[in-house]
Image (cartoon, rainbow, N blue to C red; front, top):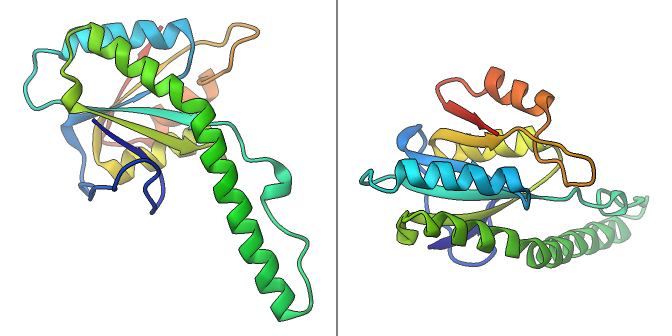
Length: 185
């Protein structure tokens, strides 16, 4: 099992090089803490557990970064501008670490659910993405990781964190050419 975040720097363990082209045996499963996500993991794990060389990445998108961490007020003084930029980057990294620690149990639970199906956990990678836009985060990770299949759920009951609306799914289906998109639930 490997745990990573999107971006250039590793979050939990050293990052590995990504394949630049899609592979049918690399599957990205976008997860959240919903019942629909749990059912998708059950289905995918049961379907894939006996297929050799299939690797799965469980991908969870963090909540949006607070607006005040998106940019600083700026300064006409270059030294002050550099200091503000450095402080903003530090604040963003701290927010990502904190938010990642809060949301990480969702990935652990997803991995446990996938393991309960008999899918070998040594072929599972856990990854966190950062939401500027859920569809963009999934597409960026899909392209960077060379995934041949993306698994998402369609849900949105009131009171639950929405992972996928029909607009997001429509964008994935439209913009992820050369990648199979499984829409479950």
